[in-house]
Length: 86
Image 1: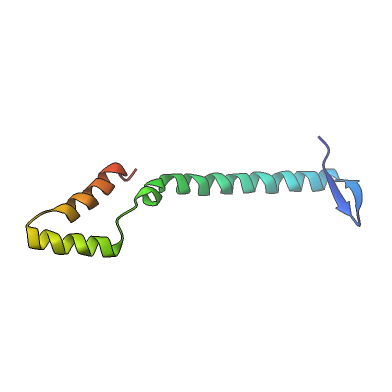
Image 2: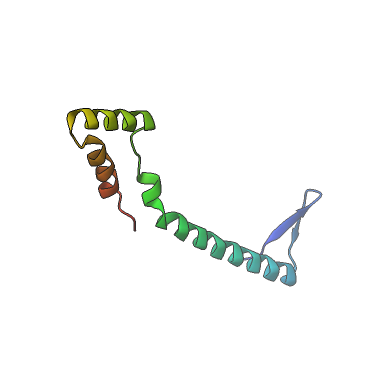
């Protein structure tokens, strides 16, 4: 399929050399996209791990110490268990 460029608003067909160069650039961009997409996908667990706020965690830790409970540890463990590393 022919590819075109625009010069001063005029549609001009690319030469064979320009089309080859463009195809090479597009292939390189696609490879780069695949590389970054794979890295992005591999780190999905990091985006899914939503911990309680620092204020909430500190409050949990305080009350755990006062009450002898493990609410903070349980909350953090649940987030990690629900969103394991790949």
